[in-house]
Length: 149
Image (cartoon, rainbow, N blue to C red; front, side, top):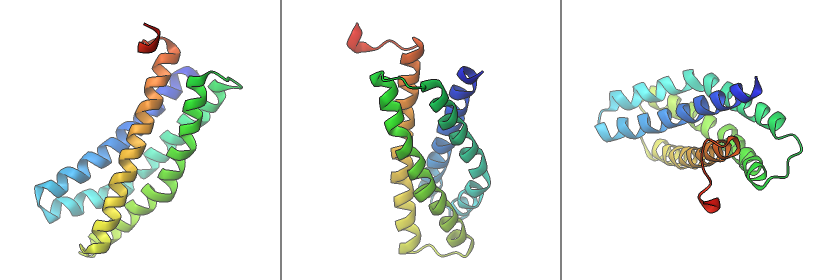
């Protein structure tokens, strides 16, 4: 059961962050203030999905790893606290601040500073979660390790 829940939750978490990130970039590039406001107002409503997916991924990952000392498992375990801290300390607060600022039409230096921080933190999590997914696929044998070819 854990071997099914873990990858599904991981993919949901990764796709959620990727959707937030791409939506933010596209809304800004569109030049439409209404699009930016709509994206910034929608993201906080989807945060519970992200939090539940990441919690399920982390919890099932810990159970699946057990006491493993395999380098690939250790690498995944080292990334998880960074992903979690980044989400809890940067991404969630940023999403809430940006939603409030957008709702009140406050698109100044504070908005764009927080948005830049959010985009960087989101990109970091996308990379780290992608690396974890790759390593998970290697662990299951679904992805060949090029170093062993």
